[in-house]
Length: 483
Ligand code: FHN
Image (tube, rainbow, N blue to C red; front, side, top):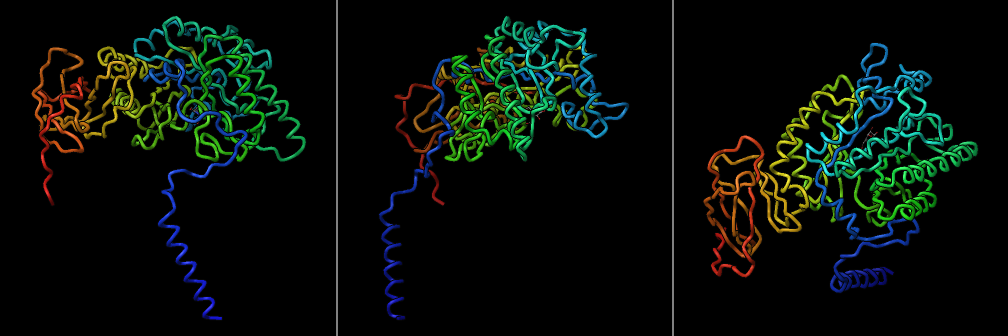
């Protein structure tokens, strides 16, 4: 018996050994048949999506009835994000849902918003048509909880879409699936009655989405939010066919990964790990560290100026980001193949807060000179360097070195790929600048140069690098020290 077991054990070991020798390297992950998984692998290749990819910089605007509270309720400061104030114990549903009867923004001027956005350098904007509270900034015919029943009466979404479009800024419609106002909305479906009510909510949601596309044909896409509830996650078949229907209604429509789940409830990435939607929408108030983190997908980062407040709050509290921090986030996003979207939360009267006006001016001044390093730019294929970020224009092939941490030595070390040489290096701000470039290192993994700065920059500086033709490879290879 013992003999038999040990023979079996030896055979098993031998088989494991054989398998280890002959098994191909596991480069393919197992893939499951999914009816409601992604319907496309890899990046969407059409011109509209390329246009999205080339934006670089966008603006988010969170506005709605929540702004009226300014983050305060009956003299008490609400410490969270204003758009969540209606969930606070202190706030009664009835009182909150009557607030819109005071919504009459006398300072609202969509043209002024759009001009400011243009000056700031954004190429697209995302506007909250309806946030979680369910209040619609357009006169939806499917609910009474809309701008039509406020003293303002006019269609704010229409004004925004037209004003931004006039400035050449593409508009995307933010739409929250969560709707605290709708009687059929549920977080989870626990009873048959819940299921029945939710069916009405699904029809209502589908109707509103089609209504938005019908009313605002200039829009380029939806930016969905609030899709994490179990009730919504369980609607894989419904959401899949709704997405198809929306895409048919509006060819070229762009939808991120935050709309639907697959049949196993996986969101953003389906059960095979593939991105669902046209770009990854998971980078909210955070940025990827490296190109590996984005898995070859398109993505956007949406960012607040304070820690986590989107709608207007009179008390931002905590750290408030400076224009340089935000410009750095934008550069980092573009250098890693993403778009950077900065949020503004207008005041109840419709004007931007002074801090936002200041940021718009400062970022705009920088973008005026340096937009070339952001628009039409992607990941440059080079490794991350300590002094800042590198982007590459996908039309001209020029590289942009965006310097945030200039070395004390003044020598910016630039590591290029093997065989890559430099033809020209100059300031984006001053095309006549001539830099002393020194080749400091070369092996078959790459070449390193020093670009010697003349003065230490006091603001984020962009140096343009035009690469030499690939044929001009030098034959000299410096040998690496043996250690
Ligand atoms: O809860 C919202 C929040 O208020 C804001 O709208 C952001 C924007 O991305 N999205 C949600 C949180 O993920």
